[in-house]
Image 1 (tube, one colour):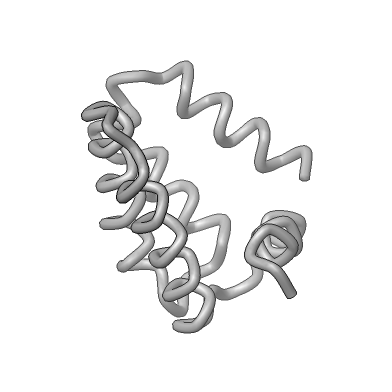
Image 2 (cartoon, rainbow, N blue to C red):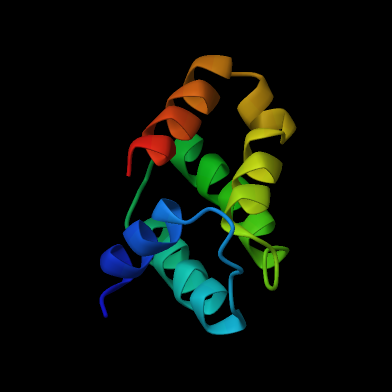
Length: 91
């Protein structure tokens, strides 16, 4: 199953617990994105996502998303945080 398919499946069931393998795949994806951008803002955002993702093994998808949205970086931009949660709820 592709990372995108896995992500969609996990978002559909926010009570699903993230395995170490799923977290590792997510980290590899975030690292790949970071390696291909020159945007400092995007790199900072990806670093925030990476830090929270590293803490997400054996946590539910819903809890991991709530922790990510609760980070200071996301709190500074409430509009993005609201859009992330809203988009996740529609998948």
